[in-house]
Structure formats: structure tokens, C-alpha cells
Image (cartoon, rainbow, N blue to C red; front, side):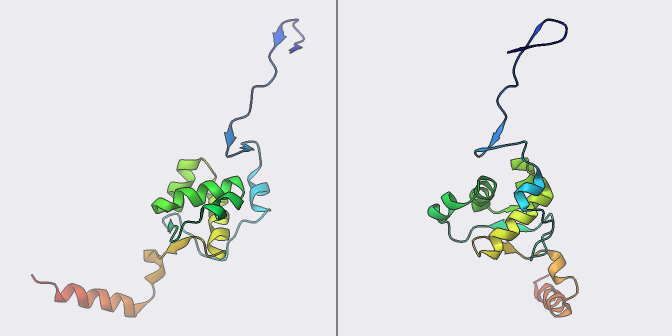
Length: 133
């Protein structure tokens, strides 16, 4: 314990809240190595899943990536992962991008993926026309 200038006792700082085994005081840029972009276009609504879970791989990941990998077993969006884990959205994008680059998570296409693909849009329209009225 230390004393304040008013002569009263001041408690030493309490234990930091932990995320995995790291302090929440770690700056986001430290988790991403200063990176803000990924190899994959990751929108907030991009769904992420783990096609083949590997417990050994999970144990080898840094704590923030591990918790993302574990949660993605349930197929969640980038935004949901960010909110559930209280990790900034940009950090989640970079870390999920790293996991995708390793081939350990699957990124599901969003509507934006097909925005300019007229073939897909024509197939959808054709399928809708073939539905019974």
C-alpha cells in the first residue's frame, strides 16, 4: 500500500481483467503487429466457422486468436465475435484474417461477394421464377 498526499491509505492497483492469459491493457496494435488490413475482405457480416477443429492447434495459438478460433466453432460473424469477446473490430478482422490465411477457419461469402456477378444474380432470378406459385 502507498499513501496519498492527503495522508490516507491508497490501495495498490487491483488485478487486471484478463482475456485468455493476457492483460486487457495490451494495445490493439500490439496484437496485430501494427497491421490494419488483411489478405481477405472481411466485412462486419462475414460469417466465420471452423470446418475441422484441432485442439492441438488451438493450444498453439496466442490467447486472442485461440478464443476467436474456439468461438468460431459455432459459426459467427466478425461483428458477433468482436462484441462477444470485447475485442476491437479491427483487431478481430486482422486475427481472423490470419487464421483464414492458415486455412484453419472458413470465411463464408457475403451478399457483397455476388454484388457484381451477373451470372449468380441471373441464376437466382431463374430459380425464383421456377418456384411454384
